[in-house]
Picture 1 (tube, one colour):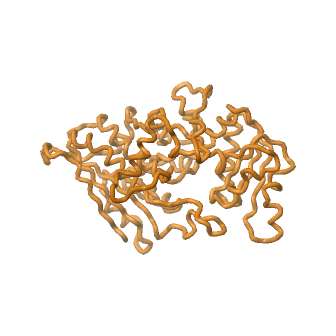
Picture 2: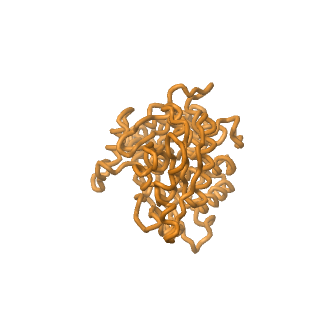
Picture 3: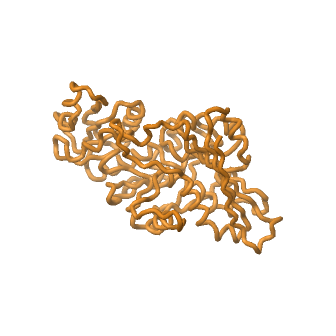
Amino acid sequence: MKLLALFFLLAASVVNAATAATLHIAIVTAQAFESPNRGKSFAGIQTRPERSIQRAVELALFESTTSFDASGIDAQLKIIDLNKDRPLKEQIEQIHPEALVLVDTPKAEFIELARLFHELNRVTVNVRHSDALLRDQLCLPTLYHTIPSDRMYFDALSQFLIYRGWRKVLIVHGPTDNDKQRTEILKQSLEKFGADLSEIREFTLSHHPDDRDKNKPEFLTGGASYDVVAVIDSAYDFGRYIQYSTRRARPVVGDVGLTPMGWHRTLERYGAPQLNERFQTFLPDQPLSATEALSDTEFAAWSAVKLITNSLHVIDSTDSVIQPRHILSHPEAQVDLYKGTRGSIRRWNHQLRQPILLTTGDAVIAVAPMPKFLHPKHYVDTLGLDEPESPCRMQ
């Protein structure tokens, strides 16, 4: 097992070491389990950069230096990259029992780890997977989600379509199981907000000559009436060719075109540009360019740590070890997400409630929830499964 330890000694010198508290954070990755094609298209083109969440976590700790100094807190960060040749349980038992554990692994390993951490009664945070099933069926009291769910993403998109009057939707999706599952979630979101489904069509992932013509965007989007084309392409294999190539001159949304995201570098309000700049420059020896910003996974990791550090006031300050479980379960725990509304944990499924950005890649066009979409308790709960709808009950 590859094991790295990184310690942030952030306690003020004026604080007696005997009274200082320790915040333990662990990042669990699994490079040996990752697909060699992660972030690549069917043709082998690198379509998405993949970066460790470590920098985002370090930024959250860096931003919390002042509060750590005032409270006499030491933050310790441990990074574990799992080894295929050793039992997972044996590897994770090294993590401090009160650590906030951020898991950034493939889905199969994530599910196994979530169950193992639950057996050990340790708090786990999903920062990578938006799958609705992880919120609806894997209802573990120790598991939290700071990355938005697919239901939240697609509810935001559906609200925007209704708000703009684009009610008739043609869906074009890819051939993978993930594409089909996400298509079903999109259908449910469209129905929820009153949109009309024109048709659903599938792109065939193949090099066979017989498939070339029927995979052409003009064919995939022809012979139907629609106001907008929604593309579901989890692997970014074909969707980038749909925009500007539809049979009808219509906008494209979904995984290309207008895309729902948890974070984007072009948000210009709520202090977002300052957060982007800190992310790019806070490590002087490892600067990033102006176009490199937090991904949704990195933003989810940053949010998880900031939710803890922003909410230290809700727990007993005399504890020698900070217990994230007490903070995450506290109704007053909140975090400034630089999106206009503070984030907090939904009690019923442990999802971080947050606004969703709708972006073209060059600009944030809207921040959902959209105007006039109301909720009796919290307006952000119009995004994703509301408490009466959720099969999870983790009050």
